[in-house]
Length: 374
Ligand code: PLP
Ligand code: MN
Image 1 (cartoon, rainbow, N blue to C red):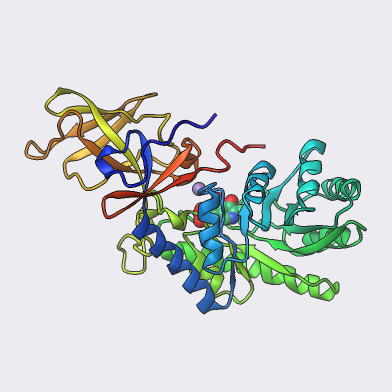
Image 2 (cartoon, helix red, strand yellow; image 1 turned 30 degrees about the horizontal axis):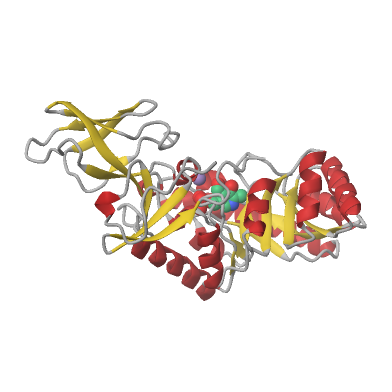
């Protein structure tokens, strides 16, 4: 059961109950527009990753600005998006097990739905599921372009798997999934670029092999918020899958650009709105947001625009603030904003995204696919 919304439309920001997920709509819209324009200028399609926001309202806005569809990571996430009216979803991940395969194939009846594979036996299972549902399922070969996660090796192994897919009556070989996840948070731009140059070479080698085998590649997908300009300019990728750009979290803000400064391509749009719930000592205060209100896998959230305040610890329901500036200490009951360390797992903790403009609640969006893990 979703929790009640923490605010009503039109409420001033200070009345939004906490903890709440706040979206600065001006920053968010600027982020959406920036990537849409960049993809268009580079002549590549945009298929943003919806695992970041899990929110159909956001997916619809991405598509209204030209995205051809979205990526999802899980079948249940894709179901939630299709149920909400999104008609083009790539599951940019492997799907294993009969229950999920049947759900995936059933979804193909209602929308364009593709999936990735890195194993011949799994391709056989995908074909069987598609046959049971009476659909033709687009399947991409995932190649490991340096992330060391899923995927077959580029080149001959990838071509062999593509042939296997193409030989199946109920499947359609739909391209390559080539996401270099490890490159996204390499801090230095030179090293980030070197990682993507390697990925591009691996994609190119695989494309040459596919061409020689007479196999067309509809989708060559990859790219995240840290490297999208590079894949866009590569001449081999034709779909960008960046996700975090809509929100821009604190971890991404630690990447560096050419001049050694922090990246500033996208604006911080997502915040955790919190209340000072205890102030037991001058230099110590506690927020009502802890481990159940934000993820900590990429570091603690940072405090937004309150100089001398640092979030130093989190327990289940408490966030410990260290206050070093005597002239700048919040009072009990004050509300302040945190920038999440990692946006995707943080969003998954909330039922609502509260859109704010000019200090008032302008939008209340459900996190449609919250908890969709299957
Ligand atoms: N594509 C795939 C397959 C991913 O796993 C991810 C995120 O991990 C992305 C795209 C989006 O990347 P980001 O959120 O870093 O922009
Ligand atoms: Mn992420």
